[in-house]
Picture 1 (cartoon, helix red, strand yellow):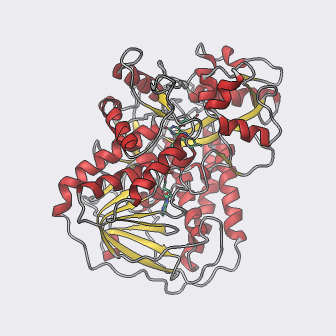
Picture 2 (picture 1 turned 60 degrees about the horizontal axis):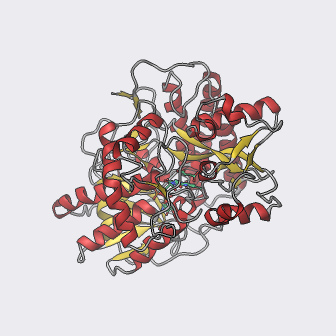
Picture 3 (picture 1 turned 90 degrees about the vertical axis):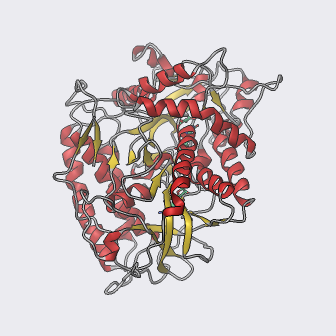
Length: 570
Ligand code: FAD
Ligand code: SIN
């Protein structure tokens, strides 16, 4: 079942009109660039995280004579993938675990909104995908007998998380990039910002949400070499653009997580689903005054026995859930939020003192060092932690093959809504989902590529009438406002008044930013702000449509669930 929202949806978001003239605002993420040497490609992959790279490798293996272009707006490895800590959930030991158990755990976490058939595909196809990445060179920790070590996280009924110490994502990203480099038919372009998907809209046709067969012909990109907006034509395009965490003030996500793919798909009139389900990780390291990416203290630490404590020293999770510190994330994050509100403090504590010191340092060396660097010896002191925006469960709606509602456009990884996560994602299921559905996109695209031609009559980007922006503050201040609005009104606990307020304030930000976009030359910062406002709008819209509390969406005006679980599709 899904609730299809057509009325009252902002339909005045259109794809862009202009060229970029000069590099206006130099930043960390866009400080260098690589030449664009290809204007047409068979497979165009946007994103160099686990989803995009897995897809690219498979295409390169299968089609040695076809061109695969991977584009990323930052350095090759600056992705959410790189920061994954806990590991990848997969059934690997039939004595202690089973597909049925993993399916059940995923469905329970998803709170009535997972697509069970899709969850089964995730769980049953998962082991083959993990074997593949091991063949591509990824290493997971083993014990002295050579058996893979398996961690446990919230909501899992078995030890099933394969990991590489506490830097699993970094290891997987390393292996994937190394594999990519071994294929001469893959070109990876860094620091290249994809602005918009090209569809019939750009050929002068009127496109609405109800237009059947909207087709993706490629993308417009901001070329930092020439500072123009170029077009790249593709037969098949894959959005693998990752998460949206930067929409919030406190997030575990790196600066690249600005929801560009979801915003682009929405502008192109693709279907977007369940954006209200933003997962807040309970335990990001609290550092006073920090803005931007917060360091994660992986849930696997609680899997090893760490306990949350409030400012009175009470291990409070026992009052909230029988699973205590290993309850699913939404429950733990809400419990922490409630404790913080009661005590008027900005964090609670994580107590790791009971964990064997050698064991801790072997499994979590990175966390140990990070805590020491801010003066916390985890064997003697408590770690200050607070929830932070972590993962987007919704996104671009796809079918079981990763195909979106737009023809020749696929989506996989965090930007996609496949039906796996429902209202709440089970810990460590996302790396698995990215690999399983990247594979499914590949299988489907493989069967179609021979029948797809390039669309050649695409106009160049038109920047007539735009001038250079005069003040960066217009962008930076709007971003701060957006993050403030989303954190204060659309965070862990919501209600109707807060959502209405957020909606009105976002309207203003939207209008001001569109004005800027229409009148000035574009920069990555302006494009990201515009995308993030769209993401904020989609989260608020879906949250307002959902008249219940379910999974990660908790609205105090509707304490209970509706009898029938529905997806919200915009
Ligand atoms: P990403 O890895 O985020 O890659 C996105 C790519 O898209 C980047 O290359 C980016 O530059 C590019 N891009 C975006 N927009 C544009 C644009 N406009 N133009 C060009 N390029 C663009 N999951 C687990 O399963 N287990 C874990 O232990 C785990 N731990 C985590 C810890 C942290 C701190 C975080 C943040 C997440 C964690 N997750 C974990 C979630 C998981 O890491 C992500 O969901 C997953 O890695 C997303 O992969 P992806 O390929 O979809 O996107
Ligand atoms: C963690 O290591 O706690 C994060 C795992 C995840 O987000 O799946």
